Length: 314
Image (tube, rainbow, N blue to C red; front, top):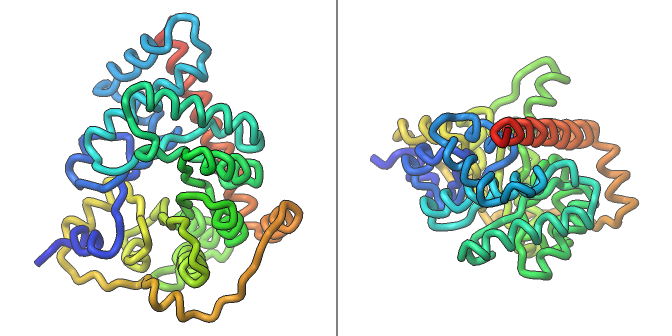
């Protein structure tokens, strides 16, 4: 009998959510995603110290810290692309989340480093937070052939704005949505009643109903049940521990998300400009709090990464 991981791969593109190459090789994902927290965790491991040293050397003695970080993202990305046949996601500095021009400049610099190393830009997704400024930057980047992965996405308004902007891929954060609702309701949610599962199902249905090409990649899972409830989603990015659970089981996996069912659904068409987007996001307490918290946490980890590099540079 096929493992749950192999069964899931029949319906969904499985992506590894890690900066640890050993884990990637074990689970044979199609793509891989990284973020500042994952890169920080990997960079602090002795096994990856040579990559940090290489990034510092490649950037040069006079390089700014942010330029060394860019090099580090790309050095990790290049190693990942030796393992996965598809794409790697590399994240723009979260401190630029409210700076459209700064995000554009940084994304172009990261892509230039990949291209200088001989990597086609189609194999790289630039991760950007799903703020209005981030979405507008990504809209312009897509027109330049630089594909984007809009992350820290917690609301339907963010998802619709991304689709209308022609973004390549979005990463709705299933587990962090669940975290908020568990804390506020004082109880757990499982299966189809999981608020994170409900959110991604709503977005997937809307996209397929109205023919949007933006790919939906569920992210930040808290348990295997959430993953199984989203079998059939375009992509799911999964941490090594949960990939291990899926690989260890041969229980049947049933497709839950289906484009034909979504196309037949009754869903109202909506649209957002900047004013209505900001109001809708503000009306959603969970999405407002979780987007802000995510930006703060990723920004803090970028600072820690800078400190790590500064220490190594002496």
